[in-house]
Image (cartoon, rainbow, N blue to C red):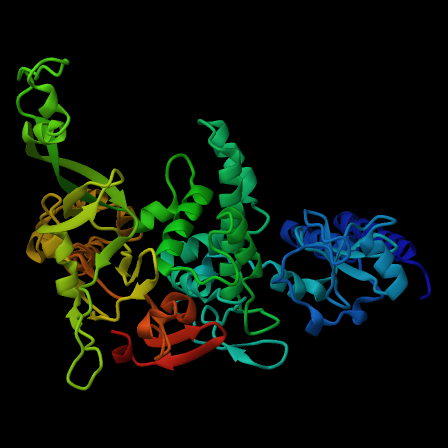
Length: 594
């Protein structure tokens, strides 16, 4: 048993050839006196498959040296010696460090010889190698490491994500609920953590990134799609693809049941955001959640865009009609005779003194109104200003406003003052034409001027369930739905046509009898669809900024930089709300959120 690995492989090959010989000879033994039952073709193929797996399996005598408690694949994949990144980075499974290459004179090869650490994993491909002998390891005992490095989800796993109530355990015995795990804070990156927590609980976004495997490179898919159309800025798209890949990998790790630790480090995503935003969002400087989520959604749209559409636009995009009123000055008397300002005339004394006044006097103010339909990914809501005077006790009165009052900006009647890029004053009126499946409402609390930044402390009360927005939608008529009696009197063809008009062909494809088809149609058209068309929304996630009590006094401290962000998300199966702030995850009552 002291033979080398090559001899072990050749010995298994001999066993394989003998096994195939007996399998093929069994069919020829039917002419003897002793009848031996023939093997079915399925059993033969099954034995061939098992024997093939045995031949492909390549074990390693150093697998018992792996230290799983030292492994952490959340950090940036770069060599710890040369600090180089790229595709060919290997992780030592004994000490957990990352090294480049596996050939001779590479950091990984040198580390294996000097430290006697022989088992490595390719951090991009997920393959295992033994150095310095340089052969690939194929052993089922390391499948848990591959699952921790690159988690994968099949269709059944994705369908069971919302209904899962079982707690998982990490290597240290700590329990955690997949999808509700803490994220490390890299010095004022809690805004990134809160935004990621909120987006990963939006079902279409989450399911899309869970369905993508790490082997399916976003770069290759984007290149193939761009060949069919017009190419854009390569640098911008490359940065967006890197952000998308890092975000997708983080989503899969957050929802994985096979984690080695109960928390996740978003280091790779933070580094991608810093590079793609050109240090607009960086470590050590607190970002504003509204700006970050708008920028991140655009990056994810570019990274997931396939032939003109993306999962981001399908989930969050709506349309709004903007009416702009702007005052402009025009010349009312273009043919008025000009004064003679020549020397010697009687007008030269008054020309320079009243030139400006005369020009303004001849101009007429006209109100111009323009209307434009545009798309949106989030709606920014203006909060009423805080009071200027203190109360009798010497403190500021914090006003409270319901969400209905804040939403008046989009009622199609209220005019909002704004300043255009040219510096002129405008008045805008907003009318919602189409709402998205998932709506992002941004309460604009921070106002900046030349001297400081202020935070509006006004409390906005909002419902956790059934936020009705039908009064703010002006885009066309709603479809007329049939009643239960009308559905029962329809023929099968008419029922299929009604379901096909709403894109629900799967309902009649799964029905065997007409009674079953009728009941399924009534359940959808009379119970489920009216709620979907009612423009009612339930809260999925809530991001809030919390400032210390002494911040903002006498305008000496920046409330954005001194405060911190946290996120509230709900577990669909148990209806339990959780408050997640960096690494801290705790249960919370819904009354404390709204």
